[in-house]
Image 1 (cartoon, rainbow, N blue to C red):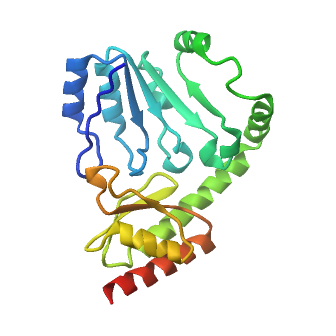
Image 2: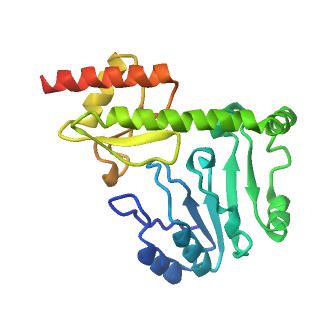
Image 3: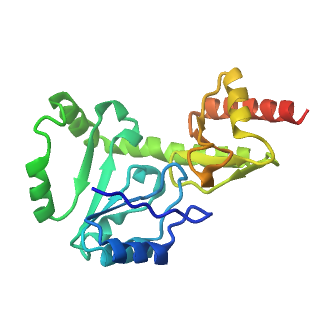
Length: 237
């Protein structure tokens, strides 16, 4: 099938009117929206999601992989939108090794999708592990809450650097741009300090000189900020 992408705006938001225009022109069989978006971490307004779902003649899938860190919940839209499906995963809750996710939607759609699902797409041990952890999900939610708190502390730490531009994040990472410096140079400098983060420079024009850091433990976040300070000071010198 042909893929049609709609570029985000400079603030990484969805250009609603342009998106509705593309949907009207191409009449897609399937529309995907990440909520929050990856790798930018920003949320899409619920009204925007509802209008896109109401305009498309096909299915619309909202990927809520980072739901635990965002507070966003698209499940409430399912009652009003027959063509809507919501995807979530246990991976971002600390269970990435299980490779277990799930899809929520109307029974009619799930019944049809079940017909084309691979018969052994999720192993027995992974299923048993998922059931066990979901029975103790309060511990997973506590962990996600701690990550949200550490994300705010990391955001404050990044805010101390004059040449860092960061964006609000509803995920377990923070996207930031190194102004007046090369992201590739900063990335390489962090590597020499034993710190590995994601270099997004060159991935898309909107991500020029952008890096993405995952929220780690308090000690890991402190080590990252200390290494970043050293690298930026060295570059400035």
